[in-house]
Amino acid sequence: MKTHHESDLSENDYGMRIDLITRVFGANAAEDFFEKLPACVQSLEAYTALLHSYARSKMTDKAERLFKRMKDANLSMNILVYNEMMTLYISVGELDKVPVIAEELKRQKFSPDLFTYNLRISASAASMDLEGFKGILDEMSKDPNSNEGWKLYQNLAVIYVDAGQLVGSGNSLVEAEAKISQREWITYDFLVILHTGLGNRDRIKDIWKSMLMTSQRMTSRNYICVLSSYLMCGQLKDAGEVIDQWQRSKAPEFDISACNRLFDAFLNAGFTDTANSFRELMLQKSCILTSRQERSS
Figure 1 (cartoon, rainbow, N blue to C red):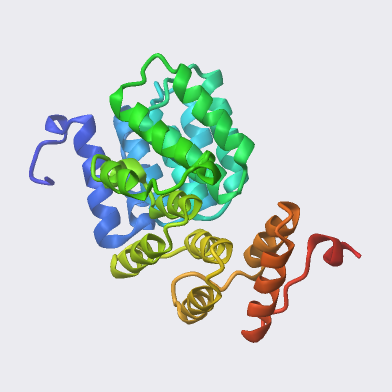
Figure 2 (tube, rainbow, N blue to C red):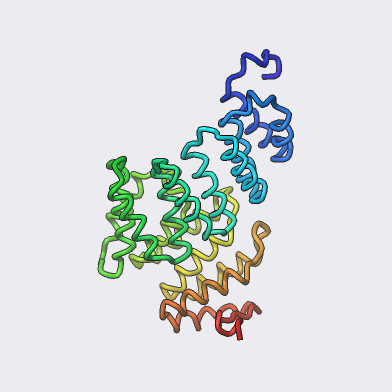
């Protein structure tokens, strides 16, 4: 690419170069390349590529500064930029920032795509925000851009919402999964939650095994999601194994604060027995959980 005359490179080419530099040399090298570009070629594609570089490296502060810089530069932003920020916040566990980005997206009158809705739903599910979850589904149903793929996704999500009223629906859900791409799911977490609602314990275990076999870097969110599912299904042995895996993992730190939030969520939902079982399980691992009330006293 360097042998080409600079004027022959398109805006997309610069974006590709930033992505390649990130993969080989890292985000800081990509940043250095971007900052040395003439202002005339610092296009939306180049900015977005650098934003993706920061996001995949979980450089939240740099991503937020670049996001603000992009808005201040009056670039013709697109939905991809907002999706990138929501993906970043989910990956680092800052779920409360996802609705903020979604609201900004609405103010700017951008049309969300299925990936956008997936991100928002994943954040609501991980936060155990059922009302927020239902609100997003309602938005999807009223979106003029919805298509058959979206309707299928909505149907799957409704299964989760109404799971307590369903019996023996597992087979139809498995068949529907095959029609949705991995990109559309964005994360296995949502699948785990769906099967938890349906009581499909074996499928939860299968999905978790699949996650462990991928090269994807596990986050606190992944562990909390499958832990909550196992606990809701009364699978304390499996939950204990997940806690062991989390403690041994070199990728994310063992997040006691996240476990405390899960403990609080069970208490707030009225699942006292589940909360007590979780506290006992964590105590066996030498981890002491306290409720929000106990921490504030």
